[in-house]
Image 1 (cartoon, one colour):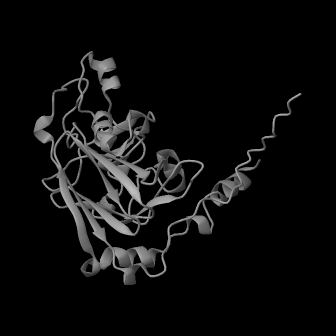
Image 2 (cartoon, helix red, strand yellow):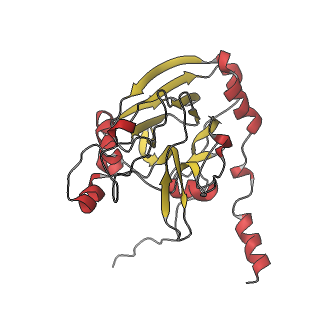
Image 3 (cartoon, helix red, strand yellow):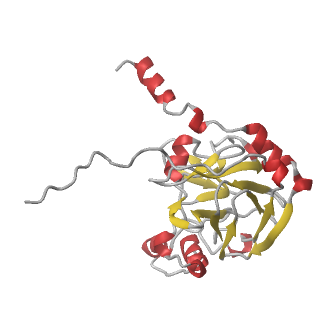
Length: 282
């Protein structure tokens, strides 16, 4: 296949009405602050996690209330948690680092937007001199298994453990915790194609805001690495508790006149046969 044809096929995979976003509609949600009603508000303390419901048609805002802090976010369909955030497909359909008007997609066989990002105060961060960007789908949550492997010690407040504890009241377990969106985290790939993390660039009051396309269960861990300015492993590593901060969560009901005729995204129309045939029994 020649290069031109190959490029054309690659581009075609990311075009079409299924991936189009009504920017005017979502910008209107972001700007219509006076029409919102605050229905829930809380802070997640350092090195902990919490899960909460966000009804369809509501907005959820994550806020760095005391300064830079990385958060690891999981999302499920509240009514069917088998449908959950799919970081890899989001990375392919949107970007490795997401921002305003990007969507976070669910896993197969559901494959539809869970949220659309409506506001991001770090949107203008762009790409820094090291190639770092914010809000990544590249890396996943820190976990006690890797910690044990690398250090020989147990530590129960990694993001995986925080999320595991957070979802228990909703009937979910460790097996439901999945790859995350690293909110407020600055990351990239170096010249050796290796993942790197940098100090979180957020300041007091920065926020990341999402519109719920379905009834959702969200869970967030305030990463035990804090703002990631102190290494947790390797040379110079020590417990970075002094750079750990809470993250605020706000949930708003959006007025009906702003939503207009919006409806939740539907399931894909694929019939689901996978080319399988019924087993013929003798």
